Figure 1 (cartoon, rainbow, N blue to C red):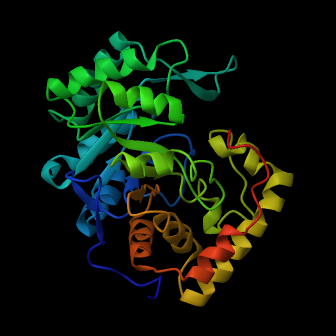
Figure 2 (cartoon, rainbow, N blue to C red):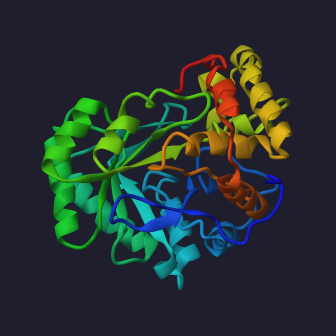
Figure 3 (cartoon, one colour):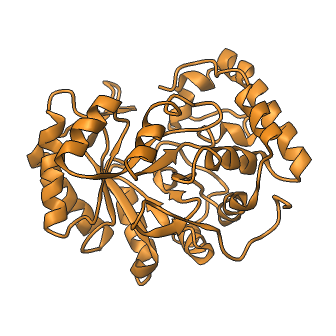
Length: 328
């Protein structure tokens, strides 16, 4: 394929056996309103989401903590009148916070049943829908038994507020405990050429339990696209504080991008498309959800579903050095 070409419609995957059919690549909506600061070339999120749906990129991923709350409102406005085209996923159980000087800080988990019951009702109001297709526990709460959180979420399925349940960033032990309470149909965790922690753990768990593995940050928060060789991040951009984007780590991590770009050149593709194709190659049950603020990037990412990396390509990418710096 010519990676830079256009496609009319993305290839599809079954999110889980018997589950909804989705574009092989979904759309993570977080960065449209949260975490990555402002961007001069950002387009109206409604136009970006509309372009995604036109291409068949129909798995839309949001959360109440993104904003907080504004991301769900944005997605809700964008899908108004097109709800039947969307496989809609949102998350609860993570609460926004700020540092002492008012800067954004990493959220903290809240998996109490009473919090989750109120959270999904508020999410449905913001999204303007009667149900979501997939509701995730955003993070396990160390102070609340997994069984209590998932039990409350099972009530949501029984009430028709969510059609299926997922979890994010769970250990294998937590996955087994959750599964014993209610079927877990999707596990969302970070997976990319520079983040492979889950390849031998939850990725395999999903394959054995007929669940989807939904890969967030498959482009390494944008780094694997090769666009940040001379980037400077503002204080309102989470990456300005992320260990992998600190100067010495950043320079060391360019070796990963160099290899991705080398493979991309052989295919006439972009680095982003190769990074996404690597993620897709990890299993038919894997669906990456890259974010984007531009329609052209949505189309570029969607075209990655047509890119077939060779065994040699995959071996080269598998052999790249691990990243410098922790994930968070």
